[in-house]
Amino acid sequence: MSRSVAIVFAEDFSAQLEQLSFHTPVWLVDTPENRAAAEEAWQRAIEWPHISVTLFRRDDWQALLDQIALQKRPVDAIEIIGAPLTPVARTTLIGAGYERFEETANGFRVKR
Image 1 (spheres, rainbow, N blue to C red):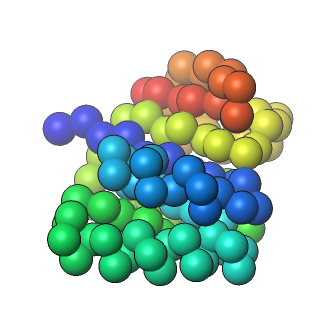
Image 2: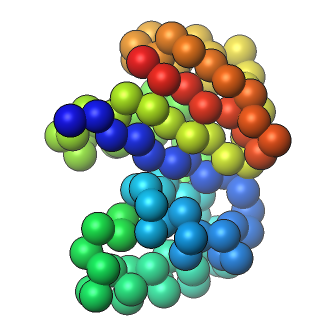
């Protein structure tokens, strides 16, 4: 079964988190604004258990991909919001098996 996730680097994604988290698991950079929105999402997850929001600290791409892989479900596509496609990100994502890259208005998408 294929699966996609969103990785959000935006410092304040609180206004958009509810809509995105209803459709896909979200990995959200840990800031005060994002933490408050994540706590609200965790409360919504009591009624809607498919909602999944995980906070992360700004780290290197490899560490983040390793954490996502620990979820033990294959991830075939990632939507990156609030970060550009840097050479380091591209190299790390290619090393993790992502081959197709598409820039978006808010970041980029990758697929296996």
